[in-house]
Amino acid sequence: MTPYKKGDIILVPFPFSDQTFSKKRPAVVISSDVYNSRYLDIIIMAVTSNTQNPLRTGECLIEDYASAGLLKPSVIKSAISSIDKSLILKKLGALSSGDLDLLDKTLKELLSL
Image 1: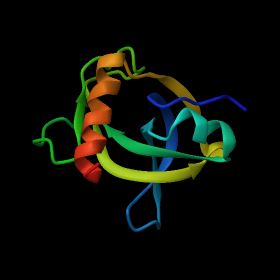
Image 2: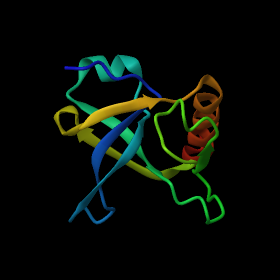
Image 3: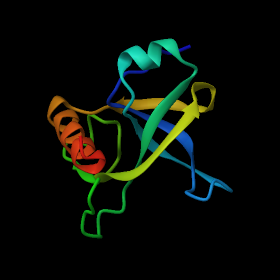
């Protein structure tokens, strides 16, 4: 199985908040590398290309979307989920170091850490 790292952008069937359906979409891995190496699941946040709306608390714009393997500017949403690694369709790319720092700052704000 492919080792996934915090900041990787992956394609997954991301569950809707009511858990009844899912939508194939990019997501960013937010679980630690230690967690990812030990367990069969992975913790992720949804990514969307809808950048028209103002950013909400817990959201951040991916500045270097090309390095992340995305085709257009995208936003990391505040939707967090845990999924089994076997559901990952493929790895698209990875956040740049600047975008990873922004993700960490956003997570601290979202979770009051």
